Amino acid sequence: MTTEQEQVAGPEDRKLVTLARATRARARAAEGAAVRDQDGRTYAAATVALPSLEVSALGVCVAMAIASGARSLEAAVVLGDAEVVDDRDLAVVRDFSGAGVPVHLADPRGTLRGTALS
Image 1 (tube, rainbow, N blue to C red):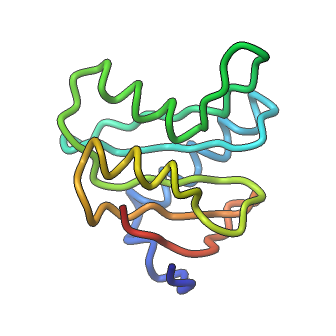
Image 2: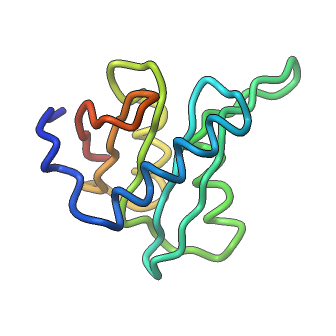
């Protein structure tokens, strides 16, 4: 995982950070996430933590993209307290979109911590 802030490639990835941050705050969740599909559509979600259902914020985003007819992702952001992107989240992105999709990790304020590839 790299740690250079330059890894967020321009305004479209910064938009994902903003969406993830707003969704996390609105839901008062542990994590927020946002993804951009191959057509430029964005999806944002928060962690689901119920006694009968647990899904990461990124997992919910991928499910939303699939349900909306997306064929692949261009980029993703996970925002929260984690120091690294969870391997299961990377696997979800890789299963849907293949290897090499950038998954940016940001802290709760939206500051980029690093980028991993699916």
